[in-house]
Image 1 (cartoon, rainbow, N blue to C red):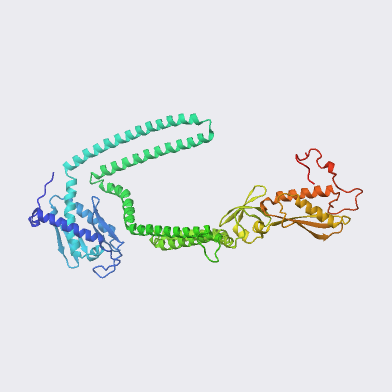
Image 2 (tube, rainbow, N blue to C red):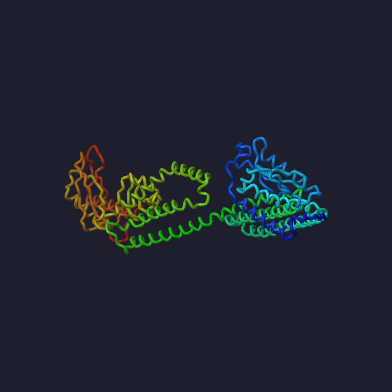
Length: 558
């Protein structure tokens, strides 16, 4: 072990302790000072900005930061200063207390005994935002500590002890790696055996077998990931500890430590910095949520009829709520945007702009459908359950959304129609007036001129009367549509209050018309003919139920 005799001018251990405390305070003030953007050299020339500065590093520890000029860059100057400090530390004739400061007017000379180390200039001090005298005194204490640490770390006793520590760490790390490998293999073997038994039991059930295979693959992958993570962590801790024991490898250990610590420290500092913004965002979230709940409760009352608004239909409640909800959310996002972590960075702004361009280019049809959907909500062309015809599509409304409306066709098909299409289409609603005024079902027949029109009207009305589901009041009526070349076109009109059964009612009405006209021997004319047939084109009553048709169980109609 090396022993050093401290000069008497340090005034004993108490003065040395006070000096160390003072140096710590000075270096703390240096770390928090603002960097100068541009300074002048002693000769009046302009030095580069604070980015042209380099750290003087000895054994991985930063002594100070120095500036450079074009002819003598900061990196080169820092390396030469570090070399002189190491040379002084290797000279055992120089004690740590031999570090001297000499004011040269425009600079301060730092020397170790009679050996020159470097000059400190005003631009060096302005990097830290302090005076050159304060920087020189702090650097003096830092150099004394660096010389002491440099020699202590290279003393035979310390090197021997650290070598033993390194051997022990190596043995412990090897044992841990060996144990991890054995444990991983054993655990993987157990998992494979258990899963194989389960898979064999599920092999007959293909769906569950496939899910079990996927679960087995995921579990083994997770074990492999955990094993690799533990191996990497063990090696990292070992290398950082073992390399940090020796001064020659300590810079690499510090670099390896900073490789993980620096990102974690950056994330931690960023998290601490953004805590007030996160608190504001949380409060804004709860306030917006409370406002939305109040709006929801209000319009829920409007929809149920508990709250009455003049000139405001109940069906408008939920569309209006959705619009107000969108406005509240957009307003909250506008207020929250400046407080989102990273929102002021160029990367965040660039991504936001890029996403905005993509949305604006690809969402034109979506926006059109949204506007059309809300427009339809206030126009109220139909509601869920109505029988409607949109262009040539006939069906029952089963779902109404902002973007689309879903219909169930008469063939039990689901038809999805965009809101923008409905807004520009012809919409026929069969259900709106059916319950109060009745929906008129109508069909047309062509009857020859030789048949009295009063007989035709009576038969058509009787056919409507025999059709279950058609209303007796208002009574059915017949219109004479046209006097054609070969026939008179009659239209029977009958009321119903169930538009969803239109197809069944039309079928029953057509059947009754055919039966009645056959029963009374009146021929329904084809679209065109050349001459009157020798016999009327009717089906005799005896042939109504020709095979394979079967007569009804009850009494025959009529």
